[in-house]
Length: 223
Image (spheres, rainbow, N blue to C red):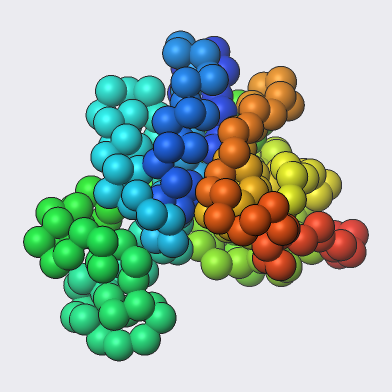
């Protein structure tokens, strides 16, 4: 887990999913001295996955950004480790593997395996999906159990993973995946100020909202 950054402000960026042009446009909108946190799932789904990965890694190596692991990065690492089985979680169902091929995926494997799960800020934390309320360890696929049980112990938690039409706050949770790969926006949220900056994602749905971009109705956390 990475220690808190000393940069003046941070911008937590939602799931990129291969939308490299949107990521480049969004980074250009953000102050160059501010720190960026990519909230996982940079890979898969979009048309320019390698370009998105290269840009993300360039931001990491320059010291400007932290790239957190998402479930898609973790799935690719697991598939490379255990073999090219069939199915949606294996290499046969992986957009990144189809676009990059075996050689490039294996070159990226150590980098993807090294990605942290959480970035800790001052009064906030960013992680891909949330924390398991049984152990309070980061969990790359969790949704409702975390949303309902989170008690504020880590301050504001900023997550991606679940596409929503606009940046949403659920109690002490901020959701920043606004479905760039589904024709929504790619969003960045500043935990220090609450400001949101956005650029257009892919525009291949003819202006129709993708069915996965839904507002969330979540009951209050359990006492």
